[in-house]
Length: 108
Image (cartoon, rainbow, N blue to C red; front, side):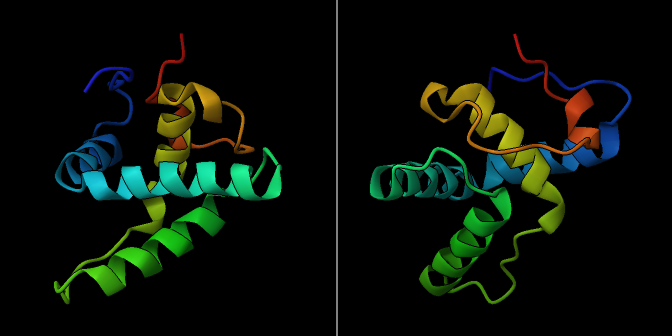
């Protein structure tokens, strides 16, 4: 996948996120869909990644038969940055706090 660059300072968490993201494309797609739905329905252009993440967790959990399926809360910051970087219409939708994910994504 293009649009982000792994930095040497954060190999463990970044590698875990990248592996999860690659193996679970439904998570990204669901988060993007929910963010766009929020904007279209409310007219607001800000929402917390936590709210979307919990909704995505619920939707995916009821749609899967895998009893061990989990969404790691540690990936929230990573998804927020990736979404805003790759989806032009969602740039700025999340307010960000400092995170180790900051050194992972290189915004052009």
